[in-house]
Image (tube, rainbow, N blue to C red; front, side, top):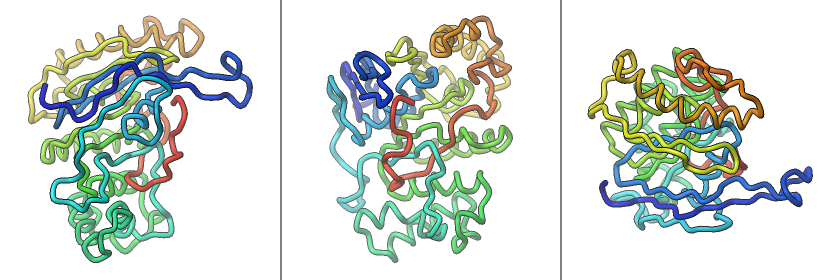
Length: 309
């Protein structure tokens, strides 16, 4: 593995439950999670709903601290960028664009918050809007965009910051299956051009295999890492691999590890034996568009996606 950019050691996380759930009103979201992410690596995390995937992502990015264990992040913001730009840019579980700002100003928002002059921030934003096929809508407002366009805007904002690490929480989950597949291909192409370090949480096994170098599987709550799968397909990666038998075999292996945990999370045995290629009861497997709403970018409300999602 290349040099470590992010590492977590024996991470635990507890939340106080307002409804008295858990033991003594305390809910354990994570239990003993350890992982390392190398520079330029694309790591995908799958797990049952409510297992703490989003919480883990927020801890990795420093939006909240662990109850136990430790996280280490390599120092350094964006190469050649202003000192206020953080090491990690987030894409949360909703579109998160700011409705009172234009598309151009939304894309520039992260750099503006880092202290970059408006003209310079908007110039950088316009470059990414062009790459995201949004340049013609730079003066429009988010409510004038389709869902797929708003998602591209969220990604443009994250990439515009120049942060070397992207932390993505179900960024494509709210899109219809056709748009989601196109966005997966676009994200794959962008990563292969930029080679940023990415940790992506998803409910789609297909998405994790297509995009990732490794797929990490989490247990039902309290979340633990139960297995890790190396993705064998070389880079640059052709989206057509999804139609091949090797892809299908790897999907089945990941689902075999995951389905019992999904059943535990549901409180039933409904997940066992389901066909991963047809969107099992949990929503895993083929690209069904299942999942919570998808993300924005740097500078969105840090409360978004909180908790053991």
